[in-house]
Length: 356
Image (cartoon, rainbow, N blue to C red):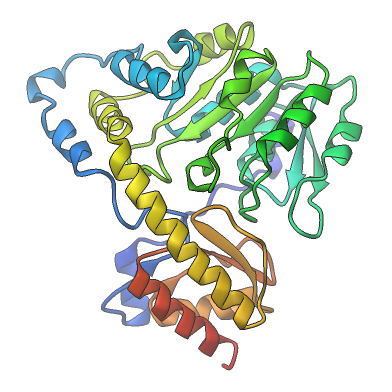
């Protein structure tokens, strides 16, 4: 066994909904814990998946993801050959660290942020340098640049960040990428970029200018396909060729590909859903201000809020049928933005939780 494996802990998923409901005697459980799309995906997704013939199940799927590749390339106006697809953005992160990191190398990222980056760096024998975000949640880009050394083989920036939800403008990101040495890859995880209120939020177009830039996306969040597991990234050689070499040849099933392609094609549905989230998000932010909560200014479909004793508040909310994420920080909880009526009920229970 590799030495670094001995200290790793397995990911502990949430209990199945049925078990949670039985434990607390609930008749209904509203999940606000995993930044999921509670509205559900476009109806066209299910239609497309149903059209997959059972006679196709004994044959391997399209290893090139041709139809999905074409749809994504058209959406972003990029070269389809520069796309790599994975079973969720998690697989893209795993492959990136496998290709770029190893013993003696390091990854530079921010804190707090998505934990998968450090996990996979550790698996590959690399270390992780974490630069704390500023008090308002924005990235300390000077600190990130200062942390780069001769052994830095990957920089990871989540924008908007998770769990803070804070977004960095395109101009700020561009200035940062310009200052990174061209031989140091920069991975920008844009899992939540669709929720940003901005006409030019993404750095996707910059991938044509900066060969060391890698931009990742997922269909798990705004597109509502968390169960289907589809992620992708745009990148350039030599990383592109290496990623395709280590990627499993048939990592996405025909059903996954059909559903994802249908979701990408239905941009009108996506836009309607995102607009709904933006409206509900503003209601949440206004309410948090009015009730003197400390929180980060979110540009996503979730909000990170200070509640004092996160476990106590999380347990109370769960007993009332609301599942939030209370495992990220001792004093803060993160919750998704749900349906309007559910949001209103969660606000009421959140107020009560502080009085218990």
